[in-house]
Length: 632
Image (cartoon, rainbow, N blue to C red; front, side, top):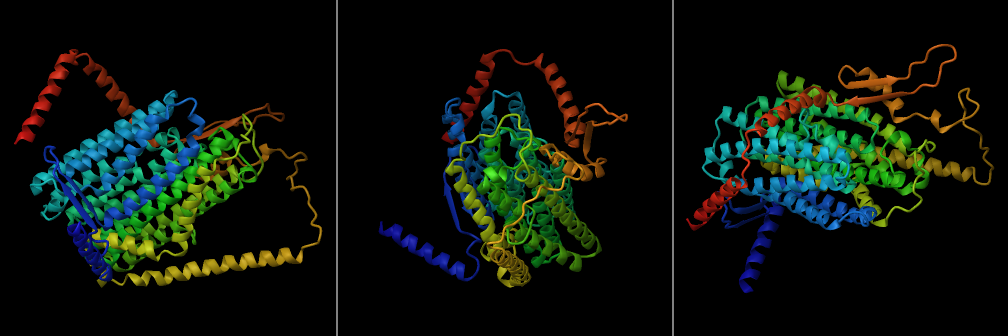
C-alpha cells in the first residue's frame, strides 16, 4: 500500500509539473500488459490526440445510453432488450479501445469489434427488409475498409519491425512509401468516416438504426475514421507535399456534396446523415490546412488546422447527437420520419423544438454556439494559409474559404427548411394523428446536457480550444509553448461579445415593447391569403418545394428526379408531383459494381467446399498454431 501511495504521489507531482509547462496533454498515461496473441500486446496510451476523441465518445455514449432507456420503452413488449444492451456496451468498449490502443493487433481487434457490434445495433428492427439491406451494406463496406487497413498497418509494421505505434513512429519512412500508406489510410478509414464517394452506407444505416444508435454512429463511430487518419499522420510524421492538397480537396468535395444531398432529402434522419458527410468535409479541411502548414514548415498554421479539426470532432459529436435525439422525439410523436407529413410541432413539443433549434444553430456555425468556434479556427487557418503560403497553397486555401462559406450558407438554408417544415406552421396531412403521450424525461435530460454544452463551448471556448490546440501540436510534433496561440482568442472574443451584446439589446427592446403595450388590446387578424379565400395546411411550403430552387439549380451535379406535376388545359385535372434526390455514387458506381460482384459470387458458389469437416479442420489447424505460438 505504501508503494502504491508513493507511486501515486510521484505521478501526481509529474502531472502538476507538465501542466505548469503547458505539456499536460502530451503524454497522460500509458499501460502495457502481456497478451498471448501473435504479434499483439495489450498496450494502451492516453495522449492529447486520443483525449479529444475519448471525450467525445464518453459524452455521447453516456447521453445516448440515458436517452435509450426512455426511447426503447416502446419496444419492451415486442423485442428482446438483452442482446441490444450487450452490443451497446460492446460498441462502447470498442470505441474506447480504438482511441487508446497502442498496438496494431489491439487496434484492429477493437476496430472489428466496433464493426460487428454496430451491425447488430443497426439491424435491431430486422423485420424490415430495408433495415436488413442497410446492415448488410454497412457490413460489406466496413470489411472492405478493414482489408485495406490490415494491409496498411502490416506494411508499416514490416518497415519498422514492430507492431507498437510508439516504436513505429520513431522509424523513418521513404517519401513514396509514406504517400502510399496515407492513400491506403484515406480509403480504408475514409469508408468509415464517410468520404465521398465511399459514403454510401451512411445514409442507409442512420435511418435504419434506432435513434440513439444513429446519434452514436454519426457523432463518434464515423469519427473513428478521422482518428485513424490522424493517428497515421502522427506515426508517419513527414509526408509528401501533395498529401495536404489531397485531404483539403477531399474536404471540399465531401462538404459541398454532403450539404447538397442533405438539402434534397425529405426524410429527417437521412437528411441528418448527409449532414454528417458535410461536417466530415469541414474536419478534413482543417486536417488539410494542418498538413499544408507542416509541409511548408509553418507550425502555427499546422496547429491551427489540426486544432480546428479536432475541436470540430468534439463539437459535431455534441450537436449532431442533440439533433438526432430531437429527431427521435419527433418521430416517436408523429410516427413518421417524412418531413412533408409534419408541421406545427413547436406548439405540442416546445422544449424539444427549442433544443432542436440550439442544435440547428450550432451545426450552421452561427456565433454563440460551439460549431462557430471550430469553424472560426479553421477559417483563421485558411486565411493564414492564403496570406503566407506559396501561390499553389494560397489558391487551395482560397478554394477552401469559398467552399466553407458556401457550406455554411447551404446548411443554414437546409436547417431553415427542416425547422420551418417540422416545427413551424400548421400540422400537415399526417396519415395518423400524433401521439398525445409525453416524451420521456430520460429522453429530454441528455438533450439538455448536449444543448448546454453547445452553449458553454460557444460562449466560453478557451478551455476546449486549448485542449484541441494541444492535440494539434502533438499531431504536428510541435512545441505549443513557442506559438502565439493566444492571438486567435482576441478576434474570437470580439465576435462573441458583439453578437452577445446585439442579442441582449434585442431582448431588452422586446421587453420594453411588451411593457409599453401591457394593458392594451392587440388586434388579431387572419394571415394574408395571397388571393386564397380558404387557408389550408396544404398551402404551406413542403420540404420539397422549399429546396426546389437550389436543388433544381444544381441538378447537373445531383441525381435529381421529378415525376408528375404537369398542368395542361384551361381546366386541368387533379394531378400530383414528387421529387427526389438520388446518390450519384450509389446509382452510377456502386450498384453496377455490386451487381457484377453478385454475379461473380454466384459463379464461385458452384465451386465452394461443401463439407463441414474441412472447415472444422481449418479451425483445428489454426488452434494448433495459436497453441504452438503460446508455448514459444
